Image (tube, rainbow, N blue to C red; front, top):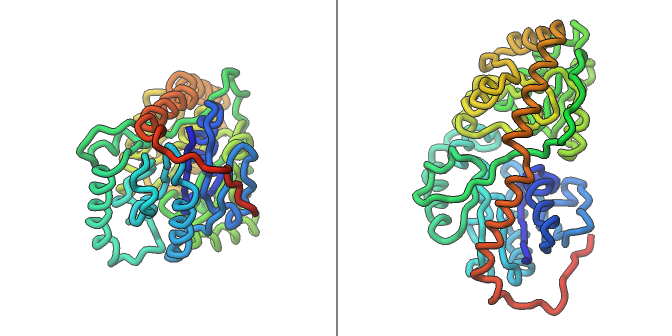
Length: 377
C-alpha cells in the first residue's frame, strides 16, 4: 500500500504523525511519502520514507505553505492508495487529482473550539470562522474518510468514524523510581497549555531546590517570557526535542506537568502528555480537565490542582518531593495503567488495518508511476 501523508502545520517529527502512525505503516511494510516542512523545522527525514519539503504554516502566514502543499499533493498523491491529511486547512482546496482518491482526514482536535486558543487569530474573527469550520467538517464527512483522535469528537459528526487514540509506547520493563529533584513538562508551550503558570510555579520551586524542565517548542507570544526565565535560572527550556528523546529526558522526574487551562477544546481531548508521563512512571500533576481527571483519579497516579493556580501546582510538587513513598506509588500505578490501557502497538494494528481496508477500494485503480520520485533537499 502506498500512503501519502501531509502536514504543513505540525512539526515533521510530531509524535502522532511520525513516531506513531508513520512508524506503524513502515513496520507493516507499506510505502510512505511524507509532505511536511522539513527545512523550516530543521528536521532530517527518516531514510525509510520519501520526503517532500514544503514551507510551514504559522500564525497568519499560511497561504504560501498551503499553495506549496497543493502542488505537492497534485504531484505525489495521484498514485497513492491513501492520502492521509493532518490539517483541516488542507481540505479547503484539494487538487483535482486527489479528490477522487481515498482521502483520510486525521482529526486531531475540536477545530472550532480550538479557535479560542489561537493567539494569532483576531478575536472578532473567531465567531465568524466557527460556522465555516462546521461547514467544512460536514462537507469533508460527505466526501472523504475520517479518523478521530478522541471518542469525544464523535458528537461533531453525523456518522460513526473509527477512533485512533493518542497513546504511547509503554516498555514491558517497569521504569525506575521517580527522583525528588525535577518536575518536567513535555509538549507545545502556550498560554492555554499553562506556560506562564509553569514559569510562575518554577519561581517557587527553584527557591526550594527543585528544577523545572520544559521540553517543547513555544508559541510566539510566550517565547520572550520563557527566554527571560531561562536566563534567570528559573527554568531549563530545551525547545523542540523529538518525542522519543523528550520522554527519555522526562523519565525519572518526580512530577509530569499538565496545567491546561479551561479551554473548550481541552474539555473532551485527552492530554497525551498525561499518558506519556504514566508510561514512564512519572507522577502526574494536572488541572481538572475532564479527560485527564477520568484517567488520573481512577488510576491513582497523580494529583489534581485548580485551573490557573501555579501556587497550588508548586505545593503539589513539593508534596511529592517530601513524600518519596507517595511518588513511587503514584509512578507505579501510572505505569501499570498505561501498560494495560494505552500501549500504542495495540492501536497501531487497528490504524494500519483501517487504512488497508479503505485502500482496498482504490488501490486497483491507482496509476503505476514510472519511477518513485525522491525529492532533493
